[in-house]
Length: 629
Image 1 (cartoon, helix red, strand yellow):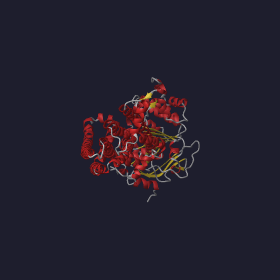
Image 2 (tube, rainbow, N blue to C red):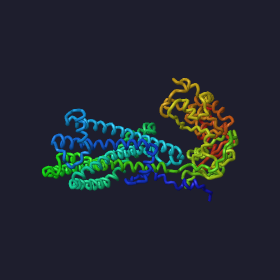
Image 3 (cartoon, helix red, strand yellow):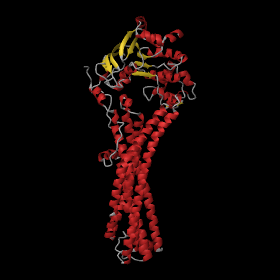
Image 4 (cartoon, rainbow, N blue to C red):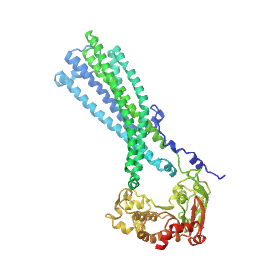
């Protein structure tokens, strides 16, 4: 039984389906809320200032209602000042303004109301600005932390988790947290006047206040049923949105294949089906929300009827002033609005809880390449010896791709790897780049076990040119340097000249500063490959890997790069995966893989003379090339 490292065991036990699982969300998940609010910690001063502003705005809002009911109605219109209902000093303040400015009482009251309205508007606006500023900055940090965390996940993670699901967490799910936090800030602004209004109402008429408060549990019960009815709906909405993102990403990234195979109608039908399911869930959520809102509106009308019935009788019996009844009608909105808003925010809360679970599931996903506790430091320049020693590996441990592969590549040698599709050629390169965990004592770099080296140290010494060369947004120069501070503009240009990329770059409108469109669509396949060679040469690695690097280059372009390739490989250990005969003929060794097993190893001529698998592959794949050359 072969030894297996702890990392291999972790790889076997990792359930990537959990990342793709449908999460329900928990409304009262306090631990999750604390983690979300934790990102607001750096902005606590801004949040405290926002809280002061909303307290001021809320208190002044109550004063405005007092001015209308107690000052305008009781003091000015009715002429009654002896009511036991508190006026919070507004009548005295109105009389002072009246006396100080020498104006009529109604103008004094209007002036105070206008001033209060301005203070409320300014303080409320400033509150919203500071609150939203804190939230968007906190979520910016969360999004950056999430992106940085995802960048550190290994290739095995992205092999098994759909890209659309990951994109949903960084975009839609973070946006759901924004809606929740903004709604929570708005609720704070509603509950302050709620408490002030409740205090004044109790001091005026305990009986009427208690009658109105009986309606609050009714709203609470309705909210409870609404929550139960909508929790599952909003979970399904989020999951269908995630499925839409995944489907869209797959179709856009593979649009050429879609169009070549005339799958537009079929793919549209698949997308429409998912979209239709999402529409159905959205409509059900809208129906429930509408019914809940209509119920709350009806309850408010019932409360107004109670005030008119009870308050009217109290006015007739001189137990309440007319202004007091009007104040109750005004305060009723303050009494019920927070409860109604809380109910309306529940659907946002449902979405946000599920989104929070998904975000923190991604942040807590600790799958990674296992780094050595005490890494070996590499010298300034490697000799370039590479050894694979009895290497067995599978992306799923139960299904090995490579089986006992052994080969030694001496410094400066060129090894060509050939074999049918699926034989494990690219897997060897991925393992050499430390993109996956594997058993100890299997791959060596200058006689150092790769498991004793930091993955980044290994990758900085290896230059890889893939058949599918990735172009980043930016200029030609940016795509050669890739942000490496050690590579100057002059060095990048020199690298481009060496691989014969300089000529076509200079023909572009802005030369090396020309901006490339998405995936480098304004360059030909051959030009992109030449740019890939320039990128690797500029980094000056000791080990060069060419993975089918010239498979998509036409004959004329290949002739241009052959001279650059020879210069590029000089003094470097090179591993070549190629279908081109010339590349294989120039290799010092040819490794023939079949179903993950080394079938043959030797020079091109020796393997042809052996008349084994390599000879068969040569006859099938290279005979036309041999005639041409």
